[in-house]
Length: 255
Image (cartoon, rainbow, N blue to C red):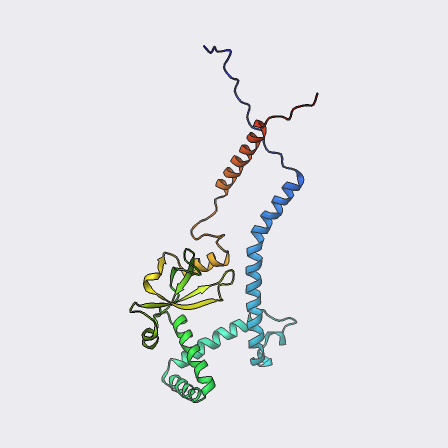
């Protein structure tokens, strides 16, 4: 029979894991990298785009209208502002009767050049589909079994093929054209036709799919990291590691 004196003594609280100076320095460095890395890359891409547009537009702006003519330094983004108002003005003129007539004359002229005709018509259809807001291209995300059975890839669902291509495809099932982006650069990938029944539509936006592909699955859509949960999990892991180390038998001393 067990008495009160034979009861096991309460366990002492686990000691806090020791973190040296180099460990703290490493954690601070990684934290600063996580905080400043996305901001720095975003600012760099924005600056690159602004300077690129400025370099393209500057030769077309007369010297009298350039800010550097009156200032000792250039104004970043001036070319972007000029391009924005120029495109808006072109769109306003093209919406009128005279503008539409000029556009039709220009398209007729380009349509008579064999090499330019195919390029112009293809680019026009792409721009009208992407920027008109009326098309449904790349607004749905799906999964297809690619590159081998049992392996699934994210695809962006596009339009159905035209009648000529539909008649040439084998089988009687309806096909859909899809674009499979590559990781980590989603602007490159594969375009192919796949039967509609072979596509599994998922509840993701094109932006979430691009983020998932660029991060190679590291950043999952809808999953926001919780610092408190991460700290709690880290504390539990450290406690388990210390407990396992304390339970290991000490090596026998040689007599």
